[in-house]
Length: 322
Image (cartoon, rainbow, N blue to C red):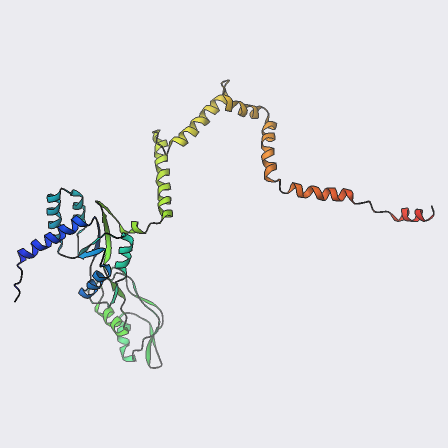
């Protein structure tokens, strides 16, 4: 008969296992495990087998093991995991692509009934239609203020009703009604809450950012840096081009208002003295833009010129007696 390990031995084995995983893996997903059953967790482990390992345990034991490993190895980056170990959570160690692992974990959600006292993770709406219940069951609907009618010997819901709001606790009446209707409104599984990658901690939403999203965020940040740089008159790479342009405008304004000049200012001064020169400089550019229509009009004018003039009736009569 196998000897059952003591609690102290179990703690030592758990410390060794967690420390070994921290040595091997540099990427960890912190996942919430509320309302996740043992069979469901086993299926998740099977689905992730190969590149990933799921480790569950008490938060105090995990924090203790992480501190021990940080002291032994001197790797203080892993201490960033400790503030994330709040509530019913587990650790998913992986060497694969973080987004793909997160998507794989999300596949293993199972439907669950609304049990009394549970906090609703989503809004629960009862759709209109025939419930299949006999008229004696109308008391449930009356308690919950759900409009119904009797149709062909069964209870029919007239309009959609928001039965439970997200964040509210499920009451006994709501749970009984949903059970009678055979509705399993909730789905539970491991929910990735945070991502640890080589000492950095970030939200799982970052995994789903596209190149366009990154470019947009970078552009907004660059514009903010340029704005602050110009407001403080502090030169930066982002603000330097705008500063140069503004400086050139100031110098050009000074040159126009005084006798001081430089090559670029001469042309501007000539345009201000004689606007016709500016029009002449702009005209070729305008002509180039509309050049496609001009050649087409020219042949029509030539064709008009080549057409012989129509003879009048008087000329025809005179020609008969010549």
